[in-house]
Length: 324
Ligand SMILES: Cc1ncc(COP(=O)(O)O)c(C=O)c1O
Image 1 (cartoon, helix red, strand yellow):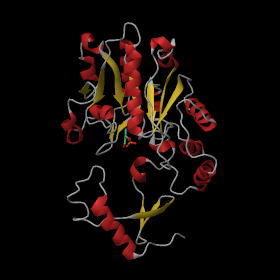
Image 2: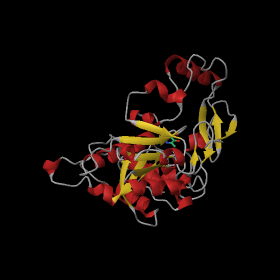
Image 3: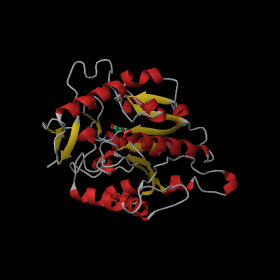
Image 4: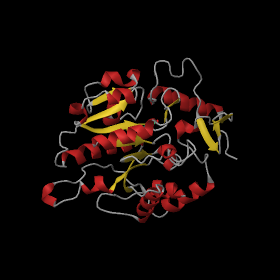
């Protein structure tokens, strides 16, 4: 039983929050003034408990992250064991066994064996950022594909908030003020709009990004059945990379391990995060094909390396949590 925080300590934490904290997607001038601030203290399974001992069902699984429940003993044990071994080491210039095992396990989730390479990052946005930069750089160093610098995304989509991911965003309230920054993106609503694009234009497109089967921002909007398979064919016929954002849908949330499996589609890039560690640590992965990987190989003098990464790439504690 986790002891409740005394009322005066809760009040103190709220005062500190109001004085110093800044919450995401939050009108801060209203924060705490129109509604009570709930201070979450602990979780167990589907339950959250606030600092005053009140219990809530975690109905959105802490923003679609928690798939195994709060404080799962196996995940906690794996984290504790890894923390006592080593918490962090650089993945730039070093490897470690947990990352190797996790990468292999992730690729094995795809029975057709096409997604063979895994690039780890920190969260959903950086997994998308990885896919965009890889797709762009892969084109830029492949003869005959250098002109492919443009991306296509869908209206009302959400792919994260780093600048590349945000330039894909199709929700004006969030993203229109950042227009002009980031990457070049065209938004479409459906396949008919894609089909109306000229080949002069589609020859400049590096990738099309989609949340497969269902879009999750603001409300849940399922795609019509068959759209993903048509999109796969469209991309294959035109030499465009298909990038599936499975940040929300991954790891069983739609009933299959990944949503693209509902239509037997394998993308060229698959981004996952949230459920990878069930939210116990920030961790993400971008999977891609051996064909893409090969475009980054060459003599040192050719300068084809993927110049991208983060301090916490392949974080050992994240890997330990994900492997449970
Ligand atoms: C489909 C999708 N893509 C990307 C993201 C961004 O992930 P993160 O918040 O971990 O950066 C989210 C977050 O909700 C998402 O739902």
